[in-house]
Image (tube, rainbow, N blue to C red):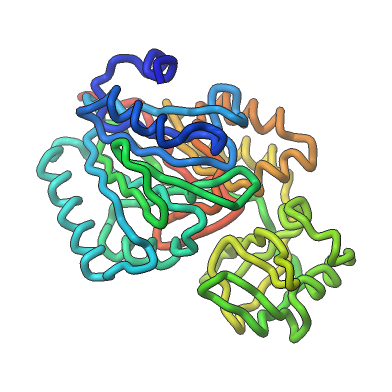
Length: 359
């Protein structure tokens, strides 16, 4: 914590966000950070990889400080996620947003930042609730990770560690901001129908009335016994929502041959196999677009673990890292991303923060 604090500087900060490798002592780190910044909201989560000064990093702890001169923040904990009262959740959000507005009426930009237990399987319900209470305030966030183990994920606020919970930070700023979400995927003509599923557990048991893993593998021309995270990153499936497509990423095959997804899946849903644009070229174009006419000073990003896996597969990790570094992107690799009312996968979702308008 001493090194992190030295890198961040003295502050004062309105918010400190920490993204920690799951191999770290998360409880001790959270307590030390809260002790070091007693007058600051400190939020943290475990990761599926970090995005730091070198781009993609592993086994690191990344901290981001929001100076109190430019930002005003109100944060709080939501949970337990499997027993939320919808009206209470929305009321608490509205009250917190009103308190923030009263505290910082002269700060014209705003966004909501969400960190969620990445194994809670409740992101869709939560984002839908929050969106109804946020009004025009844009929301983005990420699901905490545990590397590729998918065993335990944690979030913490002001030194207290939580599971089955989420953290919301409502932010107002003197800096212009833009919340964004990007992916480099294109739907193909290959479609499949979910014919048996357990939505609460994000399980697909049958596709096209056949065992799910077996049918998915058949459509890819692969052996179902060889399906792994590399396969899922290379061959994502998407669903159509309105005029756009969104990934419904596969996490793993369980012992009974069912497909376990990172996000909600329902019987009758039509899934479409997707292919990829060049990830590095797409990222460079998209981040450059955020810089027109003025480049962001910083970008806080939530990047799906499957993008990191894909970058490794196609040997572009170094190129992607260079792009993230050049565009001042920091953040973490997630088990899913939140954008507005949606829980999505295989995206880079975040907020671009531009130099402040101090006139």
